[in-house]
Length: 233
Figure 1 (cartoon, helix red, strand yellow):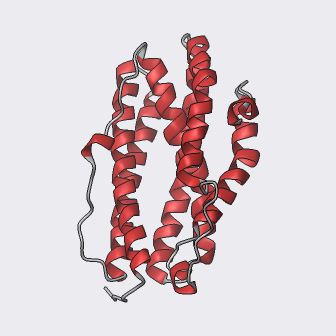
Figure 2 (figure 1 turned 120 degrees about the horizontal axis):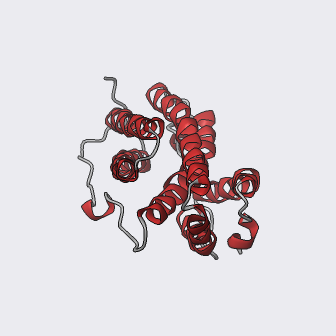
């Protein structure tokens, strides 16, 4: 593999992506176990297992980019973040929480983020990784909204809806804290070399999150009878 010593921030970001893909695989695997325990449609279970395989493929591709950029360290996994916690109550409620946070919010945002990263990426090994990741994230996003719709249509639907309405404000606050630019913080400069490796300034993450809210979260939750604007404040 051709290696090129990229800026340190490039190596750090792609190593972080390796770790994030492992985490996504672990959380999805845990969610699939819950779906099996609930006896949901085999189609949903198999779709979840396919996502686990996707995430591991993304981790391998991201590691390939990291090595090509001159990286030599191993991923550092925080094992406490690699499982879903039961929140009390029925399993359906916990599945709904995980579905909303991991897929309806996280994967829906990921589609727009990776699309933007891919458009600016010029390094072939990184572009190939982003091509595959973006293609898969579209399917992952669809899985989340399909699963949430199925939960709302199930006998547990009224209880699931109450959990979503009650907890969506905190979920939105969490994703804003992760991807929005903190108040008073100035956007960081990013070199052209960093951009061509598939990175973007922190401020742009916040811009894409705002766009995702208007174009995805609001209409998709509204189709399910949930008003996202009330929870965003």
